[in-house]
Length: 470
Image (cartoon, rainbow, N blue to C red; front, top):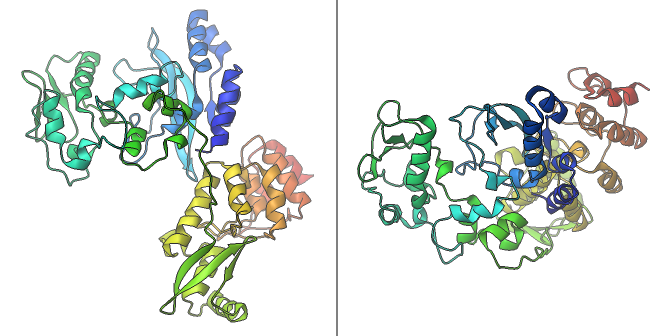
């Protein structure tokens, strides 16, 4: 997550403006407090407003569920965050991804009495320190590896008083032995689940096997008994950040400040040290040899080729001829044609992914740092340029830089869209300003894509449509 996003959301939250804090973290609050008060009374509206004032939307986004790590139950329907008397509460609806960023919306409505909540330590600044309590008895440090990484799951379960001899062997993606679990949390979480469901059976479905609580807590292989409620792995899985710290895969200084203070209390957090993001020279295998590409001034400079020969190879490749080595890399970089299948050489592919992940998460500062390090602007996997991606960034800061680097305001994606088509589609508040800025830069409002559409035909806001039709 871009540090600038965290800083902006934090500043606005501390100023008491929870709506603008949400906007900074790309979280949309569809909650009208006046309507809540009108329908449900002043006390309910006050409780909802109190929670929204203590909401850290950047912390919520930081904890977004990822493959293999579920901060909260992954579901297509809204997930409740709070539960008030009368079966009401705040709900989190997550939409499809836009690039790498998932769309989050907050709503107010009915909450099932048995539905698991998004834990408050994942979004409420008052309870953020509670994250540490989810990590088990060992300190969060590189000296304390996760049991699942060392094959000690059964021993860890036994230390928590659980018989896990029936645990499926590690190796299957579905096996509990493959997850970073905190065994001391299993029994309390299972009992809380049974209490919510009013279930006297004493059995809980774990997804892979089941837990029998009727005598000594025991993991049993095979299908669970009928009506055994399902316990989410998120209820007893170690937080992802703790696991990354244990394995040395993240610099603690790069953690979200609230997460850092929870996991590593008493440790001062320093701003991450930034070296150059772009290596001076990237190796590329070419014709059985290792050649070098240097990134300078927004261009790749081949150090082991005559530029004229390389330009001829690229031109032939663009017409369907063969290309290999450096020519193939340069063509794939400019068109995005190789990035989709990961066919760029690893160091070049890593740079490509670094750029477009920063774009997807709205990291304008990060993109500007890449360009400042000499990064050659790349096409995305659909042939779009950074000009097509301006809707995800602060266009007022980055558009002049892209134009100075020579990016074409008339560039086309694989579907024939120009940057103006992409800008017109945006439904953000800044869409009209972006459209106006591109028109000033020479964008053609009459350009037609492969579906015969002009930018005005795609306008996502009335303001953008008015600018295009003026």
